[in-house]
Length: 199
Image 1 (cartoon, rainbow, N blue to C red):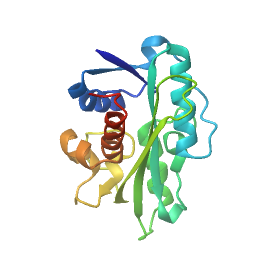
Image 2: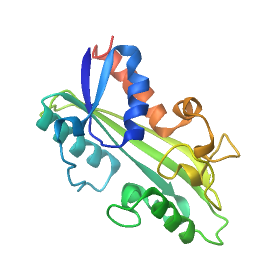
Image 3: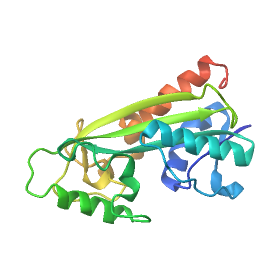
C-alpha cells in the first residue's frame, strides 16, 4: 500500500483525506506518527504555506507528502481571517474562540458573503521542483449564530450557498462532495492519476 504523509495533526482532515484516498489503496499517515513538529507558516498566501508544510513533512519523513492550507475569507472583512483562520483569536485558539471573534466582528452587518478556500500541495519528495498544486473554494455566507455539532473549524457559522443550514449540520458525505477541501481533493486525485501516481 502506498503511504503518503499528511502535513497536519488535524483529526478531521486526516479522516477526510483517508476516506477519499482509500479507494486508491493509499494510506494517509498523520505527520505526528513520525514526530514531525509543526513548521512556522511564514507565507503570505495559502499556496506558500501549503508548500512550506508539505516540504517540511517530506523532508523529515522521507515520504511523499500532502499539505493543505485552507481558511475562510469574509468579504466585509477584506478576506480576513484568511490565512490566519486557525489562529484568528490568537495562537492556540480553539474553534469556538475563532468563530465567536468572527461573529462579533460582523455584528449588525448584513453583508455576510464568505467562502472557504483550500489549496492542496502534493510533493513527491522534499526537493520536488514541480509539486502538484490544486485550489478550490466553497461559497456561502456567515450565520448570525453557531448551529450544528458536526464538522470542525468555522463549520457551525458557515451557511453553504447550496443549503439553508450550517456546514456543521450536513452529513460528512454531503460535505465531502461540496466542500472546498472535497473539491480540491478531487482535482488533486485527477492530477495524480494523470501523472501515474495513483492507479
